[in-house]
Image (tube, rainbow, N blue to C red; front, side, top):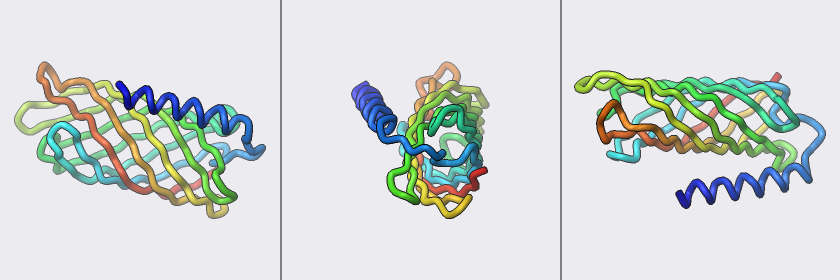
Length: 172
């Protein structure tokens, strides 16, 4: 709970500060798509793996983006298949002429298939941030995400996870 309150306070500070200093041009274009590759670690049992995802965002207000992400991770001992489908809201601001910081949150619906216990769809929520370097209409960057999930079926197992990785994308 303390982490959530801290995150919300940081978001409020960043949104307030950036609205005062907001640039006139869009920080990540009118829209953008990116491919992500991340290290994923599940918090309950320290299980790890590789996550690959595709995301797309469209600007709904200056520097405010609405988007979706779908990803896939497998060969993880606790979750043989892990497929999150996310709907996110991201606020992006220029930190320097060619660098953009993005902070966001959203909800998710996650398909999990385990070899021994079957499959289930779980609701979740995530908080994330990224830092991108802009090169003309392209960007390359790093990202971090923490995702909370409900329990798997009627068990006490959850699939809360964190991810660290990179992305490459194009703005339009």
